[in-house]
Amino acid sequence: MNFRKSEWSAEVVKSKQNGLFVVSIGSLIFFVVLICLLILADIFYLLHWGVGIEKFWKILTSPQVLDCLRRSFFTSFIALLLVVATAVPVGYALSRYRFFGHSIINTFVDMPIVLPPVVLGISLLAFFGSPIGNWIKEALQHYGISLVSSVGIVMCQYIVSVSYCIRAMKASFDNVDQRLEHVSLTLGCSQEQTFLRVTLPLARNGLIAGGIMAWARAIGVFGPLMVFVGTGSRVQVMPTKMWLELNVGNIENALVVALVTMAIASIALVIVHYMAPGRKWT
Amino acid sequence: MLKISNTSLRAGDFTVDDINLTVSAKEYFVLMGPTGSGKSLLVKAVCGIIPIQSGRIYIDGKDVTHLEPGKRQIGYVPQNSSLFPHLSVVENIIFPLKIRRVNKKKALEIIAPIVDTLGISSLLKRSTLNLSGGEQQKIALARALSFSPKLLILDEPVSALDEPTRCEICTLLKTTQQDFSITTIHICHNMEEARIVSDRLAIISQGRILQMDTLENMIDHPQAEIVKNILRLKDKK
Image (cartoon, rainbow over all chains, first blue to last red; front, side):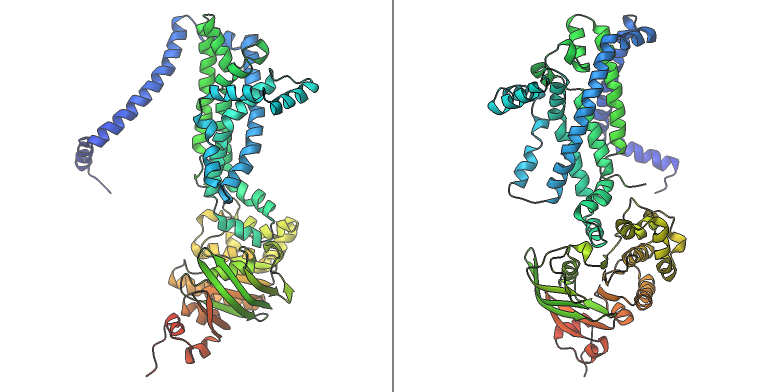
C-alpha cells in the first residue's frame, strides 16, 4: 500500500489513538529501558568506583577470576556435550513416536525448567544419599573421582539445562517435513542414514539454538551448585565467584564477572535468535 | 512386474480393502480416483513407507512385502516439492548414488542422460529454493531415476502445477518412461493427465478398485456410475 506523506501521517496518528497500540508499545519501551538501565547501572557503578578499562582488565585477568572463567567454560562445555547427546535422541523420540504416556512424559521433560534450580540441587544431594546414588558415588571414588569437583559442577549444569535443549530439538524435528524422510527411505537410505543425512541437517538450526540456550543456562547455574558442591576454591565458577565477592564486599570484582556473564549471554541470545527453529534456509 | 495380491491396509479409520492389481513390465499405469479414495495410501504401502494389514506385494516376482523401502528399488516422486532444501540441485539428483557409495565423477556420468532427457542441465548448480514447481518436479524425477529403479511411482506429480506446465510435464513423463523403459505408476484425478500418459488405468474409490482397463475401453464401457463421475462422462442417449 502506498501512502502519500500526509496520508501516512494520518494513519500513524490514527493507530496511536488505538489503546492497544499505546499499551503494547509502552510496555515494550518500559521493558527495553529496564534492561538497558540494569546494564548501564553496572557500568556506572564500576566507573563511579574508579574501575576503568585498565582496572577492569586487571580484575578480569586476575588468577582467581581466570581460574573461575576457565572452569566455567570447561564444565559448561562438557555439560553441553552431554546435553546434546541426550536432547537429540529424546527430542526425536518425542517428535516422531507416539507411545503410551507420551503426553505425560512430554510434560515431565519440562520439569527441570519449572522447578526452582535450588530444588534440583537438593534433589541431587538426596539422590547421592540414596542406595543407588551411594553406589555410583563409591564407584566414582574407586576411580579417584569426587563429586565435589568439576564432575559435580557438570552434573548440576546438565540437570538444569538439558530440558531447554530437548524442547528446542523437539520443535526442530516437528518442523522437518516427514515426506522428505519418506522420500529418503525410498531412495535407498536406512532409517539411520535418513536421520543423519536428512533429518538432522534440516533440524540443524534448532540443534545450534537449543545447544547455545542450554550452554548459556549451564554457565549461569548457581543455586544447585551452592547446595551440591559448595563454594570451595576448586569448585568456583562465575556465578559462585560473583556471590563470594559480594559477600566479602568486593562489589567491583563481582560486577566485572557479572558484565562478562552478560556479554556471553548476549552473544548466545543473538546466535539463538538467528538459528531459531522454523527459520528458512536462505 | 508389480503384483499386489489381496492387500488390505489401514490408516486411522480409513481402510483400503482387498486390493488385487497387476502392472506389466514397461507399462505406464495410472491410478485414478477422487481425493481420499486411498490412492496415495496404496502406493505408500507399495513403497514400504506404511505397513500393510494383510496380503502380498511382489516386484519382478520377488516378495517385497516386508522389505525395507530402500531395498525395493522403487523411485518415488510425491506431490509438491520433495527436494532436500539443504542440498543443491545436483546434490539432490546424485543423493541415491552417494548412498550407494558411487563416487561423484561416476555419479555425474550416470545422471548425464537423465539430465539431457529432462532438459535440466542449466539448473544443476542452482539452489533448490528458487525453482519453479515444474522445475522442482523435474529434479525430483531425475533423482528418482538416477539409481535405475525397477518401478517408478509418481504420486500426483503435476497436481500443484498450472495447466500448461501440467501438460508439458505429463508429455515429458511419458517420453521419459518410454526412453528409460521403466514401469510406472502415476496417481492422478484428472482425465487429461491420464489421456496423455496412460497405457492402462484403474479407478479407485473408498479404498476399492472399481474398474481396470485402457482409458478408451473404460470410456466406452464404464462399469459403475462412480466411474462415469470420476471420468466425467456424460450419459449416452
